[in-house]
Image 1 (tube, rainbow, N blue to C red):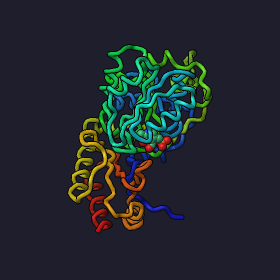
Image 2 (cartoon, rainbow, N blue to C red):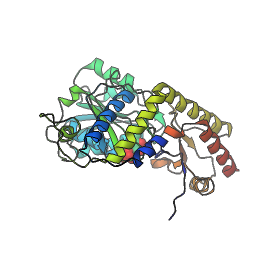
Image 3 (spheres, helix red, strand yellow):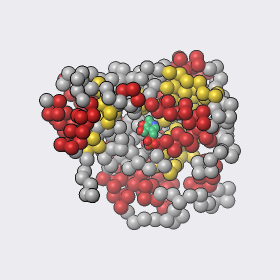
Image 4 (spheres, rainbow, N blue to C red):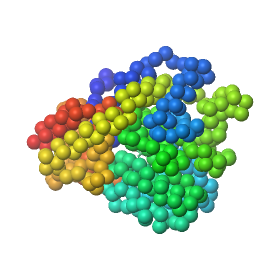
Length: 365
Ligand code: PLP
């Protein structure tokens, strides 16, 4: 079957940066080849810059964003630990599930979907949890939460609680400053604003979190101590084989990060802002209503109510078949009442906005 090109304007994956595609097609290297190890080291450096962190333990894990979530909980939660999870969408829900599988005593702080995380409610949920977890950019609703505020509030209360943040949809799409926001553990995915295919989970750990990690987590594959012996070198300074790193994917991520940093994060952030605001204004001019709370709307992912009487899935099908445009349905209980439109990475451009609005106008008649 011949595959045709699509405009991937849903919640991810997004169309890749040309540099990321070229990285995939570069000559394949072995996972212990010195040239590959240099590429891996540089990828860590580039991730540190994009994420605003000095964490020496910053690496791409092999697997999609959910592997990052899994690794975060399995390496930093012990059975019986109190873990407060801010739930304002599907991925906060998933965090509760994952944390409880590793024995955490999960304290949920439920929010209306479409609202940002309420810092005071998170603080009030428990006086001294081992860990607080939140999603920076909730892809299921199109909402950004104030992680800087949450980190500052937690640190003001004491040193014990670690802050774990999901950056899957924020990395590469907006300014993220993990160190000054007091984030201890963060993970991301490659298929959204980084403009790389799905398959890697950038991951980073602060020094103080590292000191408190689980020495022998219940999973071998995601044991950060073992992976670190390969990525950062073991005590002897050598690189010990752990698993066969997906070298082509790392080359792709390395190339995309190079492109993003050449453009500069402030410029990339502004490109996402301009595209997202143009889309949101255009949708409202068409008479559509936005789903996410005003003031907390992501630029890279817009959620919009499906107009009364319109067949949500039918519109998505027509956009795909007639225009080659993919957009997403809503998540959870909003599956049929909300559409999600992504302008991520290489798609954060005004030409994509006009193309989508034009096609949507035609389909809605
Ligand atoms: N967290 C967020 C905020 C996401 O948007 C996603 C995927 O859409 C994930 C986690 C899970 O990532 P993946 O589907 O790549 O495993």
